[in-house]
Length: 107
Image (cartoon, rainbow, N blue to C red):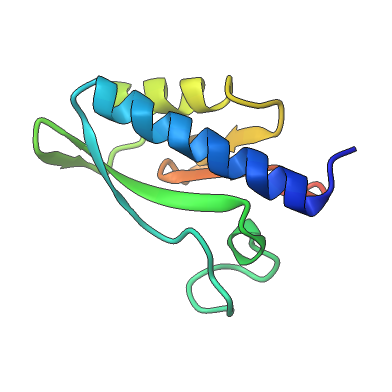
């Protein structure tokens, strides 16, 4: 069983892989919430509060992609989930720009 710090370290490594994957495709991202020290903007108990979630904004050919059904989101979400057994993509539950590691039953 991984400690929280070990999960955070593995998560940070996976985010690096995600960014490398995005830019290798010629896409781009801007970073959204990665760590939230307070309850503004996320539900109570959010994984953002413990450094196990990040939101990104995806751009393909300079266009912001906000449709989670877009092929780029689908590809990005699928590859994210290959980086680690704990990796979960928010597109599976209606939040396509959310990438996280499970912790205490939360994704």
